[in-house]
Length: 248
Image (cartoon, rainbow, N blue to C red; front, top):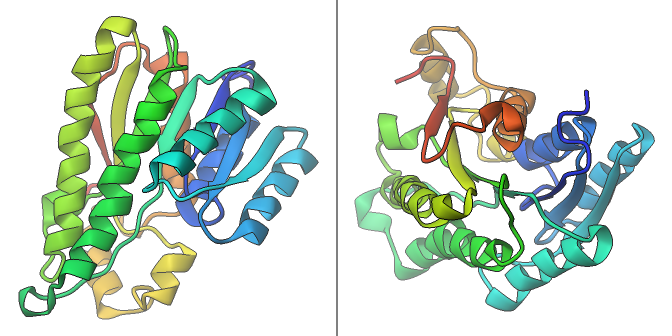
């Protein structure tokens, strides 16, 4: 498959989980990929090695998207290594659940800094290099539909992502740059295991309420992102694709 042949993509937060799957999928479709990581260089390097072993091109680049200098550095690395930029996937994200009485400034700022400010800073840096036909894909969440208890701050960040997606689709549309969001439901990732979601009552409830009868896997999201990165989705912008097996 070469629908992204000649394209250059950045995937933030791509050292594991959904981000890693997206990076591999974009590379398999022909894109050269910047695999960004915030803390796990080893994880990002492993993703790059897997892409290279399959005949693709990728580099790992460290950087905290919530810091303007780092966000610019990630974009600069794409230009340095591959000469241009066509696709930005804003996947970096953190989540912590807490009931109302346990919300703190730190809890709020940590999630908004990465999930919202980080998305804006990275897109701001990337927009200077994106040309006609480019695609920005934001990773939102189905939490904005199902609004689970204890998730008020995390759900608020993803509500902001939904809103920003619409705004930027209008701002960048005149330059023929598309901006869309993919909003996954529960996905089996390393983070989901670490948080104790896998094998829990939370997972059982999600599966019971999902028409397709299972939780997602990273590749389920990656293939949708690859579609949005390609010209197959050339007439889509400002959209939110809810990828949760029918869970609402």
